[in-house]
Length: 129
Image (tube, rainbow, N blue to C red; front, side, top):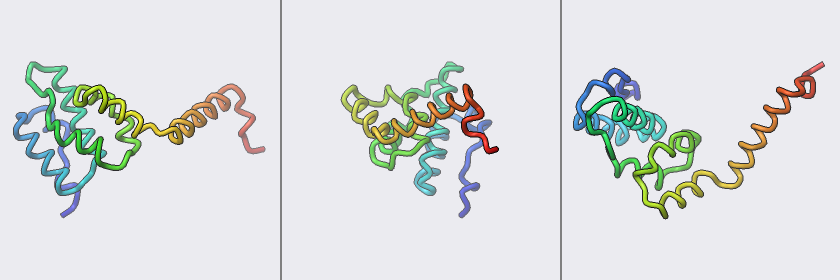
């Protein structure tokens, strides 16, 4: 089946009940193994928890822990990981941080930021004549 069959709209994420969403997100991840979208869905549920009185705390805790601790570190995981700090203990959080942000990735990101700053200050430096 195509991946579009399994996607959840943001309307559904903000309207369906917790148990239904847990089932659908679990099924989505099991069938597609798409960590990026799964984490986005779970981040949207955290926003929903903050905006409503419904309880969405620790939704799919084991799935979140599996994705962050057992799958390949990706840009999406690095982008959203801080939203899930309460899913991990202190030691696990330190391990996760060092796993997601290796020194190589940190250096590449800092160089990219530096290049952007240089380009803003001296745009002629990287311009093509």
